[in-house]
Length: 69
Image (cartoon, rainbow, N blue to C red; front, side, top):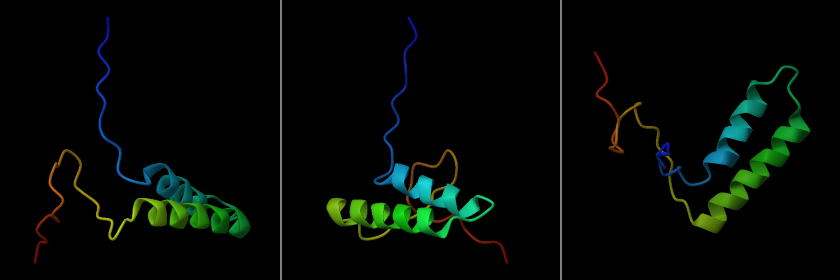
């Protein structure tokens, strides 16, 4: 029997991913993306999100990677 690892998903991840993919589509559908933006904003308001951050792959921390000079 296979064991499925359940990784916690970031808050509003589905809505954010849908909006990013919409912005990347060619041709760009402004109305569709605007609708997805409103859905993301609704999720953010519902979950009371204050700030998003991106983590490095394999990183468990929420801090940014050091920047090279």
